[in-house]
Every structure is written in structure tokens, then in C-alpha cells.
Amino acid sequence: MSTERTIVTIVGTLLASVIGASSAFGESKVVGPFCSSNETWLVRSEAEQVGDKYILAAGGISMDGLNAGDLFGWAPKISIGGEVQGDLFAGANSIDVSGTIRDSTRLFAQTIDIGGTIEGDLLVFAASLTIKENAHITGDIFGSVAHFNHLGRVDGNIRLTTGESTIEGSVGKDLKLKADTITLREGAQIEGDLTYTSRNELPESASSYVAGETIYEKVVDEEKDAEDRKFTFGTVIRWLYWPLAAFIVGAILMALGGKHKLLPVRRLNDEGWTGLAVGLLALPVLAVASVVAVLLVLTIPVGVIGLFLLAILAYVGKIPTAIWLGRRVLAFGGEKEPSPYLSLALGLLLAYLAFSIPFYIGVLAWWVATSAGIGALILAVMALRKTDEKVPAGA
Image (tube, rainbow, N blue to C red; front, side, top):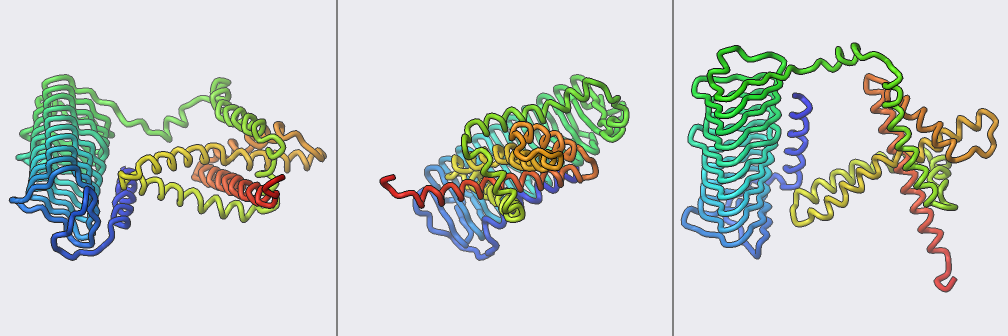
């Protein structure tokens, strides 16, 4: 489960960098629905906030009063001891919910403690999630956590990917876990089915805590499974699917590019190292900017567009590199002006062979090929813009 812990840590670090690190305390001024402050945003037990609130507070968020609407909060530490009459969407290093949330809840943090009531579903991504003894969640729980400790009451289903899970509370419907280790202790009560994926099967006594069926799905050893696979003609056909799909996309793009279809390839040939540097910088910058835009809620459409663009670039980025590679290989064979479509086909076959190399070499090959192609595309667009600027307005 190290990958999940890494993802959670990255998300937590990103949130912390967006929020800031100030720890001053005090009550911030709320102007309109959005509040950004270097202090702690406080709603005391006798206070009431009306309407949806978007809070970005570097000191923290502490709410013991009433929020008559949805609450979107980002801070190093968030404590909800009062009542939120709408949805709660929160991101922090640590989140404590001891009050009442009247609707669905989405939480992203390192550590999350639930001791109150959530009258809806809970979506959670965290390093540690604890459902305390007095906690009551009327809906479902789903998401991914490294450490899960359940001592309270959940009326719906629980579907989690975890590293370690300890169940001592009640589950009103089905419990589905994918974990390294699972422990059922005295007090656990599962009214539906228990479906779990783990390296070790639970003892027979575990079925006494389950009213429905207990279904064990053993973890497949991917390395051993790969050794057991036989190399067949069907394997070759399945492998060729991805280069063929990329060739079709590349052929369509070249047809749409017209006389400029080989411009990215020429940029790659003339400014290969510059293109690689531009691509290596563009990918993470676009990814981080898109994630931050989504986390800030108000700019979600911009973030979604950015993520969509990132996915497109990650797929088509290898196409200019494949054409360049195919042309170089054909040139060694004596072809002075090789067909771009033949170059694309040959280059994709060689590229996907390189992508298939194990021990992270294939991943590195994909990263370099995609980054170089993206950089070449960016340089080609810049070159076209410069050409357009040189053309007189009345031309």
C-alpha cells in the first residue's frame, strides 16, 4: 500500500502549500461567501453563519456554531464541533468532526477523526481514518486510506482500499475492503456481506461477526502471474492494439495538419533538447495547476479543462517522437524522403517495444518520448504564431 500512502502524502503536501503555514489565531473577517485569511476562521458556539462558505485560512478552521449552508474549507487543521446544514468539503493536514453534518461529506487529509454524525455519504482520502465509538454515519463510506479504524456505527456500505483495517463497530450493509491486513475484533457487526481482498485469509471465527456471506478474494502475485502467462498469438494481437490505436490517431492528426503536419517533427529534429526540456516542464506544471484549480472549487471548470488537456497531451505526445524515430531509422536504410505514415508506423512499433521493457526502463522511455513530443508540439505552435505575426494585417 506504499503507493496509496505516497498519493495521500502528495495531496496533503499540495494542500499545505496552497494554504500556507501561518499559525496565528484570531477571528477573521468574512466578506461575502469567500474568506481568505492568515488567521484562524472561528465560528463560536453561539454564532451562526448563513449561506455557503468558502474558507481558505492559513491558521486553521474551528467551527462550534451553526453554518446554514455548505462549507468548503482548506486549512492546516480543521475542527467541526458545531453543525453544518449542507455539504462539507474539506482539505487539511488533520480534520476532526465531532459535530453534525446534515448532508454528504468529502474529506482529504493526513489524519481524519470522526466522532460526530454525518447524515449522508462520506468520501475520504487520507493516511489515517478513525470512526470513533460515538460516531454515526447514515450513508456509505468509500475512498482510500492507509490506516482504517472503525469503532462506531455506519448504516450503509463501506467500500475502502486500505493498508491496515481494524473493525470493531457496526456496518448496516456490506463491507468491502482491499487491504494488506484486516482485523475483526469483539464488537464488530456486519449486517450484509463481507468481501475482502488480502494476502492472508481471515480465521473461520471471523464469520461470526458477519450476518451475510464472507467472500475472500486472494491477492494475485503479479510477478508470478506474469511468469505463468504463455506467449501466444492472442498476446501479440492484444499488444498490437495500442500501437495501432496510436497510429490511427496520429494519421488523423497528420491529415488535419495539412502542410504543417511535419512541423513538430522538424522542431524535434532541430531543437530536440530544448523540446525535451519544455515538455518535461510542461507536464508537471499543467498537472499541478489543474489539481490546484480543482481544489479551489471556484475554478473547477478551468481545472477540469486542464486535466482533460493533460490527458490528451500525454496520449498524443509520443506521436511526433515516433515519426522522428521512424524517419531516422528509414534514413539509415537509404530512404531520403520517407513517408510520414510509414515513419509513424515504424516509430510506434519501436517506441512501444521500448515502453514494454521492465524495471522502470519502459516507464522512463515513455516519459522521455512523451515529453519530447509535447515540447515539439509547443515549439511548433510558437513557430506558427510567429509566422502569423509577420504576415501584414491586410494580407
